[in-house]
Length: 417
Ligand SMILES: Cc1cc2nc3c(=O)[nH]c(=O)nc-3n(C[C@H](O)[C@H](O)[C@H](O)COP(=O)(O)OP(=O)(O)OC[C@H]3O[C@@H](n4cnc5c(N)ncnc54)[C@H](O)[C@@H]3O)c2cc1C
Image 1 (cartoon, helix red, strand yellow):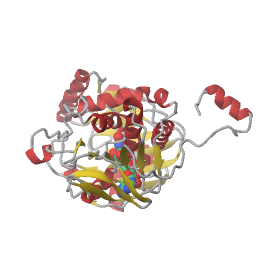
Image 2 (cartoon, helix red, strand yellow; image 1 turned 30 degrees about the vertical axis):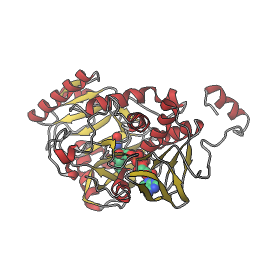
Image 3 (cartoon, protein in one colour; image 1 turned 90 degrees about the vertical axis):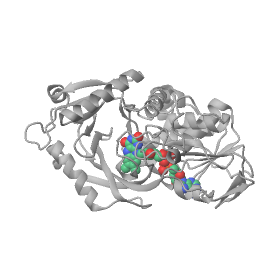
Image 4 (cartoon, helix red, strand yellow; image 1 turned 180 degrees about the vertical axis):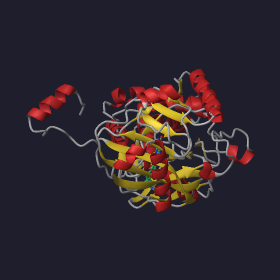
């Protein structure tokens, strides 16, 4: 089933009876050439690119809940390539290029909107840091425009420039940054993978990983044992638990991150804005809701909901930056479980167990990584070699200290990244 303008017109005129389900609901087979555990953005894109780029179609994605129920459907949908350090910058640049062709590739509307992202700065020191970051982005082949206060005021006139504790000195505009509809990204990759023969198996929790003589042989699940000699872990906040099933202790802490959405409003915020003096970022969804978030709740947890002190902290930051949002009613808030590494950058690597591959540590920036991660992780799983755009995400950097990618410069404290 392909989508096109003509098809939508025809279905509209004939009672929408010709649409078929986006993906099948197959029973698990006894054995697959590869298994991907976790049907979030990273698992689904990995399966899609394994099939599309590497011709591997006898594969399954095992999801304990439903597609889109994890972080891929819980984030604030920001897509960007504005990293400073080697290792991250080439990878996110690769991912953004995939985003730019994604809708055509998947034949699916993921509502990718390159509306521009502005990181605000509020001191001379911050300005210097953003100038350096902008130069790194331009050197990488991405786009960055430095704005002074007047430049920001022209684009975002509703910010508080005059009576605020943290005056706005300017901003770094990343014109190709923006947003996408998060659950549509999961659905689009699921549909694309299914069309190429991948079995997407929902309500199938992995409860054990079978290992013989140092190599994986399969998994135990709530729907029975399934054999495979290649297994990829893409379970985000549950990475520590799944790795423990294979006898590993990952350098990951799981933390809660909350997000918020207001009632639908007329268009007012046409960019993504990130406040530089507190953790606060905001955009407006196509339905009109203001979507915003802030910092992690300051404790490790597996609960997909957060607590009131962080809600207050985020609202305060929003009110400082743009007092007008105090008029909007918050409709919902929710939480997701973030897989935080000590340096804030991800892990895409082989594990010490043969045939078991790791894809984790996305912290709270893994949504924009979805296409890039799937493309490089499928490359690793299919060929056994690291993709050229993801050579730095090695697990052993946390053991040796060599190759740490610490964008924030805060050292090895998981919740500070
Ligand atoms: C509030 C919030 C805001 C965020 N904002 C942004 C943002 O603006 N931009 C950005 O780039 N990133 C953002 N992120 C981060 C981003 O959402 C995550 O890094 C990314 O979605 C994680 O990868 P995933 O999609 O594969 O995870 P998930 O969707 O969580 O997928 C993992 C899946 O594994 C499944 N699973 C777990 N255990 C098992 C098991 N035993 N067996 C089978 N399946 C299992 C889970 O059910 C889940 O569906 C945000 C996250 C949150 C929570």
